[in-house]
Amino acid sequence: MKTVNPVLRLARPRLVHAALAPVAAALALIFMFAGCSRSDRARSVVVWEQMDPKEQELFDEHIVQFRANHPEFAGFSIERVHYRVEDLQTQFQTAALAFGGPSLVYGPSDKIGPYSIMGLLMPVEELLPAAEIARFQPEALPVLEGRVWGLPDQVGNHLTLVANRALVDSIATDTDTWLEQLRKATIDRDGDGKPEQYGLVFNILEPFWLVPWVGGFGGVVMDDQSRPTLDTPAMAQALGFLSDLKKSRVVPLECDYPLADTIFKEGRAAYIINGPWSWQGYRDAGIDIQLAPLPMVSATGKWPAPLISAKCYSINRYLDPATRDCTAALLSWLTGPEVQLDLARKLGVQPGDLTAAAAPELRDDPLMIASREQIARGRLMPIVPEMRAVWDAMRPSYQSVMNGELEPAAAAAAMQARASESIEVMHE
Image (tube, rainbow, N blue to C red):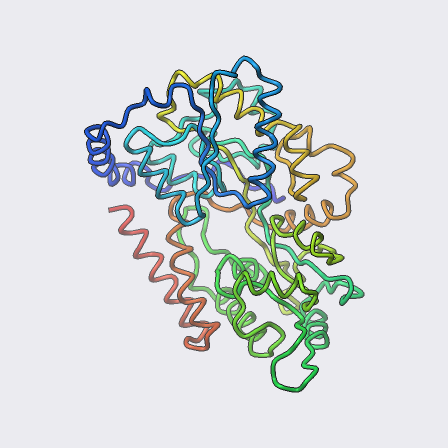
């Protein structure tokens, strides 16, 4: 992982907080008069999450282990509530603004910026001693204005190249070689114009899959002052590169996440670009996979740079005081070395806990080594709220390019204009 300063600064947090204050007050009144009472939560520790199915299964197992190790909290119920990715942020914000919601909220660290500046989170230092924080890799911690706003149970959450070894003899390390492989691996056996086997599958709809290639052409999507940097030659070149992949038919013409995942599991693609959450599923499907960094862009000599982030548990600012000790013990357990080792073994994710990360079984595992190589070429995901505007601005223009409706340079300009306008409104 690059040694980027983990203390990510907010551009104008006071302005953003001031803009949200009337909303908070209004929601608070609504919920207070609706009879929402914190005393209802006095014997219950609740975790809201957006976990994948396997993560949910392991979470429940870890709660059973917590129960066995902490009989002193037998009088507390522990409840996990699952939300879809697109729903969790809104649900948590609405509930916490009215002094309600869960004890802990779990998800990628890029959600922590908006939560913290809205005053919805309790700094970890207020619940756990410094020794608990010191056991993590510093770059894995979500830090804003010198405060720690969550503890990770895994780090990375990054895209990497996954090869089907039944179809790939040697993984390409540069895009010229890779493109030649992709063309040879794409096979239309019956000549109907629809290949039965593809060189590559990936989600061509979401800009999360675009960002690594912006880095490969020498760009970034946000600078150190939280300003969007989308209207650049690097963005236009990255858009053109991915558009050309589609035009050459080495990827399916309509390839969203489920389709890409299905084709790869069926053994009908040589490569997929995907993250740690998917790797075990491919092995369970009987695919012999090998990981490798995304190939270096031959035209620039630069490596693609996927965004790197942690998945964290954060503490609700309005945690019921009666549940404080149980919540602290649960947070420590869920992010402790025992749980992180279990997640690493069963999901292939990288631990954020230093003790777990140093375990020989992880240090010497080929999959984990390849994952770390990709992380080393990545960039830390900004956790400032302006990043939300950047994501929202990239998506429609990126899709327009992939659909052949917009030229890459025009799309880059449109992204920049939309992101700048959204951020300006955010700061009004």
